Amino acid sequence: MHRNKKSKQASCLGGISSVLCTIDQPDEMMRFLKEILTPAEQKDLSLRWQLMEMLVEGTSQRQIAAELGISLCKITRGAKILKDPNSVSKQYLNTGDQDG
Image 1: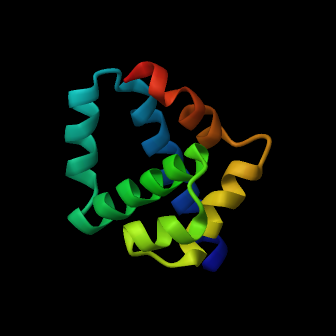
Image 2: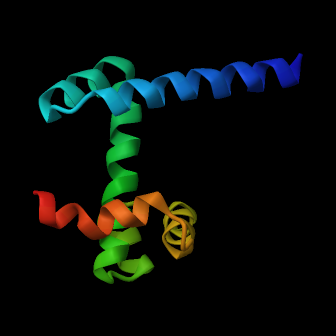
């Protein structure tokens, strides 16, 4: 039963991923995210991205914790993602300032 639940979650995540890949307009993407994410989930996602942007800019983890009011554990997770040479997030964080 537990394995089946994980399989279903992976399938749903794949479906969401496919939908995200088809949306090419920022305003439509924003509407989609607001429809499927609760306000708390939107806040968490925004906060995660913000802390990762700050890490890329060279802001210390302690300064990020103080500025954003979040735990070092959350920041450490973001730092681990950015240390991964295969990180997709890092690729987009490094090029994000060129697009906006």
